[in-house]
Structure formats: structure tokens, C-alpha cells
Image (cartoon, rainbow, N blue to C red; front, side, top):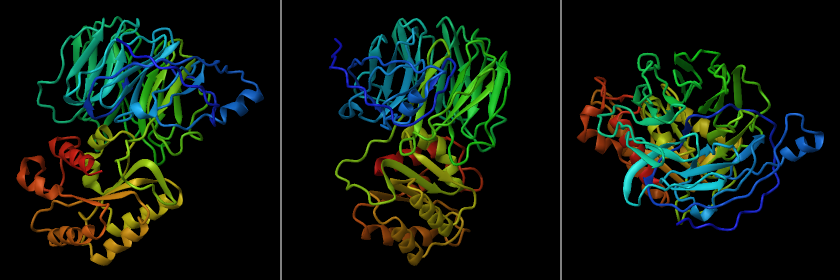
Length: 489
């Protein structure tokens, strides 16, 4: 039975501009063990028209920047949000109801909450260890699917089960899902670009050979279900079947990354949504604004559009804060995680983003330890450094105790710092010295943690390429690293 609480009072909006987004077929969500949830109810709010008056635009500038509280634009209305005490692993997915007069919110642990006229059909049972990565509504309001990064699929209401990738030996995790227009089939896509199809969903191609060092984060199907788009974190769009290319955001992202995609109602254009709240438009998708000036502290992790394509919601989220940690000092963003690393962290980026919703992964090829110190200083000065910081550096050169101390001086005031040990072949002369420095330094900081990835790696040499350093992007080793980091935060 549904347990309904009184709706939350709508807080006045705090900053933003009008925008229109097309129909979202797939909505990204992320991680954590799945448990049973109870839906809650919300209430409506007046829509924002394209021809908004100056007063309306001023009101938009006060859109509330709250993790897990949908930010409406265009004809999208506010219907409520999950009470903060119910977030669990954090709200990380949103799907519009078939009428657009409500929405479903999903948490990383598999709980589903309904607002407006969106109907609740169930949550994943407690004790399941799968990790949710997508929520997709059937299109008629009668059901929805929850997909997990292991490839396992859960169906509720009239959403049919047509198969899953749960029994397959996945080399990269599932990250997104899309359904056919009649709800009689669906696609799953892995971060490595592989597409799986079930029911009446046909296979039109995959991005396995085209991704390079990037990874897929979202997908959307054409309105007739005869094609689909895949989009990578770096903004590149791949098109298959009758899905046409209208452009990519590869040169426009800055320090953010793409998290969601949606097609226009006739499929002749699409929008891409970045973690910083910026909306990019292509083809016949018109630009009406974005939340890039609204969402500064809380990254966007998902988006959903009204069925008429004249409004949308952006969903900000943060990872749950560990119990008992102190509030951060100046320059750190409460409840947010920042990971600073080199090319090895790039291998683990898709898995980190799946396991830890909202994490900001700042990784780059050949990054040295001192470069990491400089980046941490820069992010802190810009109020963009998370209260919890993960450091995975040392692949490219030795690290002295003085350099470790210099890093800790910059990170003074963080709620927690997690250092990841490096795994390097014996011909890397500094391999042992880096880990020795970390093992000596971290115990002097009681709140901080040492994630001993090197120990796990020594036990699993099959995780690595022939160089013994790098791993397949999103592969078993990368997923193990992400799980280890998550356990230490």
C-alpha cells in the first residue's frame, strides 16, 4: 500500500532561464543496493511560458538549488520532491508521466516515488545487490522499468519483461535504457558502446569501435523506434537506423560532461544536458535557456521532458554524505565528491560515475602529483572542490612525503580525503615508493582513508592490458576500483 505524506510546500525558484526539451526516452540514474521504497505525493505549480514576462524571468532566478528537487522549465510544473531523510543513496533518476502532469523519482538504491498524476507500481525488493542505472516509463502511465548496471532488469505494472543482459559476461557496465514507442521492447547500452535489444526493439548498430577513450552515458530512441542515438560523456553523438546526426557538443562542454539526452517529438532534433545544467540544442530543437547559472553546487544527473516537448525538468543530485564526518571548511562543497587522477582514473570514470552519483571526475593523461595539487588549489579557489576528495595519482612519477604534505595542506578542511594506491609493473622504479609514501602519510590524518587498489590488482592480473597499468574502460578492474573507492568514502 502506498504511504502518502503531505506534499511539500513549493519554495520560490532561485535562478535559471526558460528552456524546452523534447521527449526523454531514457533517463540516467546511478548506483547502490536496491531496496523497497514508498511513494509520496506532491502538488502542482504554474507553468512557465516561452513569452514569460520580466516578472516571471526574475522569479526564475530564484530556482531552489536542492539536491533531489526537480527544477522545472517551460510547461513543466513542480509536483514535489522526496523528503531528504528518504533519499538513501540519493535521488538519481526522473521520468515524466504520460500526461506530463507528474513524474517519478528513483533513488540509487531502487526506490521509486510518484508525484502529480504519475502512478506508483513498485520498487525493487530489499536486499537485492544490483545497482540501478536507468528508469524508463512505458508511455501510458501503466508501468516502468528499472535497469541495473549488471544488465539485470526489473519490470513493474504493465511493463513487460522481454529479456536482460544480467547473465551475460559484460566487459563494461550498463549505463542507459530506451523503450520502443509501444512499450513492447527496449534497448540497453553499456558504457563501452555495446547495444542490447529485446522484444520488438531492433539492433541498428553500436559505438564499440568509435568511442576511443570516451564512454557512453545516455541514449534516446527515434519516435517510431526505428533508430536511436547514443551520446558520450564528452558530448559526441552517435546515430543509428533512421536517427540522423544534427551535431555534437564536443567543443562546448568545458569542465562538465553530458549526463542526459532527449529527442524532439518528431525526431528531427535533440538536446544534450550537461552536469553543470547547460542545455545544448540541435536540429529543430530550440534553445530556451538552461540551468547553468542555477546549478553550481549540485550537479545535474538526469533530465525528463514533458510529452508535448514544451517543457522539462533537470534533476540535481549529490552522493550521500558519510555519517559522522565534520562539515567542510571554506572552498569545499558540502555533500559533493571530487576525484582527481591520471589516465588510470580515466579507465574507471564510467564506473565511478555509475557507483557514486554526482561525482566530479577530474582525470587527465600523464598528470603528475604536483599538477594534481595545482588543480585542487584551483577548484577550491573557485568553490568547486568537493567536501570529499579522492586522489589517484602516482602512475607517472615518484611522490615524496613533502609532496604528500603539500597536497594535504591544500586539502585542509575537507571532510575526508581518500588516496588510492597505484598498481605498476616492477620496471616502474617508483612504484613501491609511491605506495610507501601513502602508507606512511595517510595514518597521520584519522578522518582520511587509504584505498589499497594495488592489493586487489596484484590478485587479479587479468584486469589489465599488456602494459600492466591500464584497464579496459568500465571493465572488471575499473568496476573494482570504483567499488573500493565507494566503500572508503
